[in-house]
Length: 405
Image 1 (tube, rainbow, N blue to C red):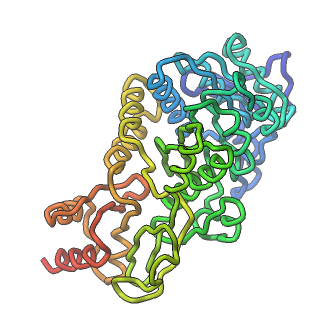
Image 2 (image 1 turned 180 degrees about the vertical axis):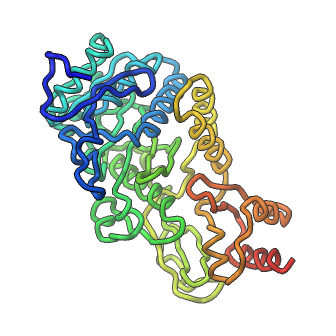
């Protein structure tokens, strides 16, 4: 499709359909010169079609939040690029009272303006050519704050957390994406400590630790402003993690959130793990095998899914016909199931390999654990993962018993 005379982009473009909107975006297939090229980063204006699922979930989550508080809401997306996220919020969220988007790139703002007009949303959607932190800081005063702030950067969201939290009104919702999983999953631990203030671990459940480290970082930033948080939903998908947290003003709320921080202790020898308020509060020896234990944290120890919020999201998803509705339904069903389950999960392949045993079917192991009186649920983090209150020692014994039958 040819670009209108109203907009002349000096790179190949195409019209893409997503949700209920149509936007002009970089034609990624024309920007790839060799197989190793990452097309979205080569585009003069960043656009990643793989993040459609992320955007779908955001629309559903923000709609569920709007239904829960039962009033019209304002939203801000300060890293807008093509404008597709904010445009979808304005077009698809009933009860959206106004959406403000922005970008530091003049070319991105020009493209976003074009896409706003293309979808006829000039009456409820505004775009500004500003640095994200500046845009958010200008809305930090009372009566100027937003109900929802959506941070979806390329890389770490940490540079924007402070201004995003200050731009939220009491009981507002913060949604944060982190794509820098190498630090968060322990490949670059020093970078994780620098950016997120917590030590990671390269374990089989590192993606859950990544979510908890990001949530813990949000707690620490919010607490400086006497603000507490409550995580209502999170997920790990493809190359990123995502956390949705509702904030609450007040020193007591902040203190309560800080008290929810702690550590996950892990034994790399026998795979035992446990939570603790301090990595040095007890003997560092593993209670099951006596080996030295390592730790991750400080991080968020409380729930990373709110069962009620998952139900609201599932209801909203059922009322929409999105390309990813099936995936979202499965994700929400798993999240609701694991909302009340213990932190961390066991990956059957990892334990079976350690014991040199055949890997059982997940459903079979779930049944064995449940019939032995333990909580046992699958997890969206890993298709071979199981959340259970059984210890690593018990899980290994049951696996051995299962292999012997």
